[in-house]
Every structure is written in C-alpha cells, then in structure tokens.
Amino acid sequence: MANITALYTSLCAILILYLAGRVVQFRRTQRVGIGTGDDRCNEVRVRVHANAVEYTPIALLLLLVAELGGLPDIWLHGFGIAFLLSRVFHAYGLTAGKGGTHTGRFWGTVISWLVILILAAVNIVISVKSL
Image (tube, rainbow, N blue to C red; front, side):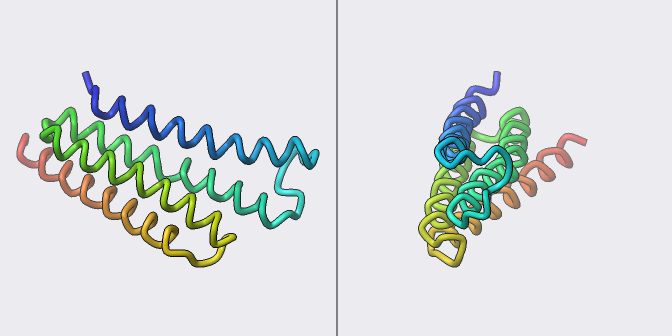
C-alpha cells in the first residue's frame, strides 16, 4: 500500500478544502454565485485555490509512482513535505501579495516546480532501470 502518498494526499486535500472554503465564504457573504463579482480579493482567493488544484494532482501522482517504484521512504517524505510546504508558501504569498509579487509566492512556485521536475526525473530513472 502507498501509505506515504496517502498521508500527503490527505494533507493536500485538507489544504485545498481550506482554500475552497475561503472562496465559498466570500461568495456567500457577498452573494456571488459564479466568478469573483469583480472583487480583486476574491479573484486572488479563486486563483490561490485553482493554482493548488492545478499543481497538486501531478505532484501526488508522481509521488505515488515513485513510492510504488521503490523510492526510499526518507525521499518520499522529503518530497511530500517540500511540496506541501510549497503550496502553503504559495497560497500565503499570493494572498499577501494581493496577486502581485511576494517572496512566498516565488518560493512556493520554485519549490513546487522542483519537486515535480525531480520526481519526474526519478520516475524516468526507475522506469528505465526496470526495462
């Protein structure tokens, strides 16, 4: 069983639900059914949530494949923690920067991309070795 991936998938799911809740809260209080109601703060909330939803599936899929391919637990935890923290950094930075530049947004993006790129490379190596 993929216990390590299950842990980080669950933690990322909780983060995504939290981010979705911020959007729902705004929409309910401002009575906005769809979209952002031309409100910049809600536009940022929507993008923070959407960005997490866009990047998380591929990272977790790559983590799962690496786990099933036998990558040692310490590496799986390292990648899982790094990715989860990168999403928190990104969400905080995009929110605090109000959609503009922010250190948290920058590092969140860089770390997310690195985790995805390294896991992709690791999985390529694992798959080539098994040929």
